[in-house]
Image 1: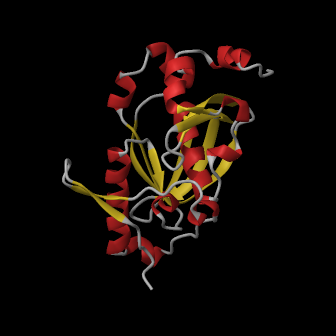
Image 2 (image 1 turned 30 degrees about the vertical axis):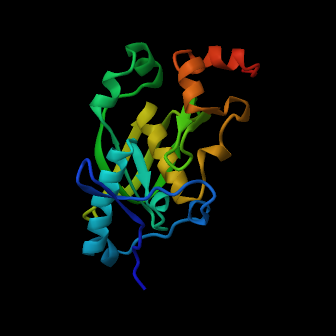
Length: 213
């Protein structure tokens, strides 16, 4: 039985093979993914999966993608917050979110080893909950230990939006969605987020929604 069996689709415009991103309700999104062995990391199938995940993330587009989101229950994720994403955002928004470009990275068997007590709250979306967003409170800084695509140990210290991306993707590997952490009253369609809330500071959003603190 193959270890890796994602669902495929074909993007004729970009001439790439992309993977089907499963949506909330799929059982794989609610199961803890298993770790990859050293032998599995070295397999061509794993290298292929990483490449397909990278292209699928970019095609979506998104800033992160975990293997369970393409139907594969392995502790593997890719992240990338490209500079062209940031150009479209107001400098004040970037500053509030502490958001800077993050180069393409592969995370294998990641685990969060440290979280700051200080937290930050922002609207968060997910490719597996397409079309919706909500306020999610997360640690402002994290430390992560993982392996890279070559199986080499990595230690990551991240803050701001980078830390948020890491927490979001590692949650996926534990069977957790942002829906489990969100402020329910803030849940909104992406269209309404852009129309009503996208340009507002989080404190103003909370006040408008009648939320405390």
